[in-house]
Image (cartoon, rainbow, N blue to C red; front, side):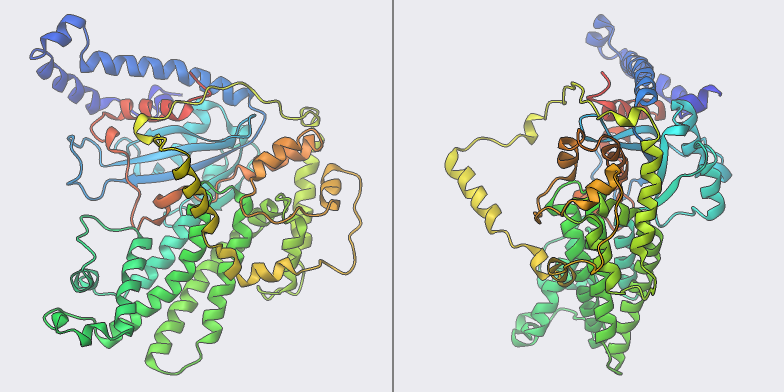
Length: 536
């Protein structure tokens, strides 16, 4: 392997520019010269520390007894006026490994944070996977790869990526946040480019200095639509001097709010309510979205032009969803079964509704898949032992991120607000039906494996705030092999973006701190930061 592959980046022009810029500034800083601290010396130390930690990271991954998911993310700088430092690189490719460590903590290790300048165009998608697998020697550890929905990862490219990973039996998962963004983008497709700005002036919700996240846009359009339905723009002459949407555009806005609202209702539960969502919570929430979209398609039977526009958009969204759902069904359903609140019962319930129009039961396919997966683990001697926790030191939080203590009264008030927060699950029709579902009339015959013993036990009482990883950690003594299956399946990220990053309308941006760094330094900083606290 050549040096550029091992380091994920060629020095090239970056190093020359770095040296030239540093020499210009060092002579004007007597303190730096006296202490021997210069930008060049700092960079040299960063790269030195990176090499040492990288060797430790390689050893950790080599000894790690779980599986990894590799994800590919292209980050690109959009609105530039908010950046304070000079921009050296506007885009980076982030290649990350996702896993759950022996303490049952979700980890995301960046294995490469690189620019595209030195990557051949024909190799742009396979390069990052290949260099990560070869550099960290993790080919046999990778069980799945996560790809964006909107890149050119065709079947030929995916097959080329898989050949670097063990026996090639690698599953492919796609980002749920990308799916939501593409569905919402399709609702925008016929909007005038100036419509949002005109409504901003009309409703006075403030100036936007960058493209807002789609959940913010949805909120603003809904606000304008509510005012329109109340005839607020006609009752008050103050609005007479402003441009207003046409009747056709109000139909487009109402369609956006209604269908986009369905997506947001599910996205909020996935990305806002519970922090990071492990893969076990996606199946039942995405099933809820499918039912909502199908209801909108079936319920809009009018023949007017506005009804035709709405139905067309609803059908298009349902088609996009179904493509994703069909490709991800097995992974999502398997993770759902490993949630003790659902086990096989929810998958059986979903299949009994025949929502997908299937005559056969997909539940049997899911069970067969899990049996096959479990058998591979059960045959390994190491999997007969429970996962042993190891001591780690979590990184300290920044002072700016810590909440100040204002006394017991404020804490009690926060607890009260938390308890009074409305539960969206009460409005999820499919989920409420599931709570009344008694299961199949003919009980299954189970053997004596850990998987069978787990499935025979009744599901636990529903609790929205349930943490699957904590449950499996406690049960690892009871189910030593199955808990390892659960750890690897639940570690598969179904969305690369979390929290409010999941609502971006364009590419996510790299952090401002790396924009002015040369490529090697940016890679060292981003990788090293993600390896803490397991690697020091």
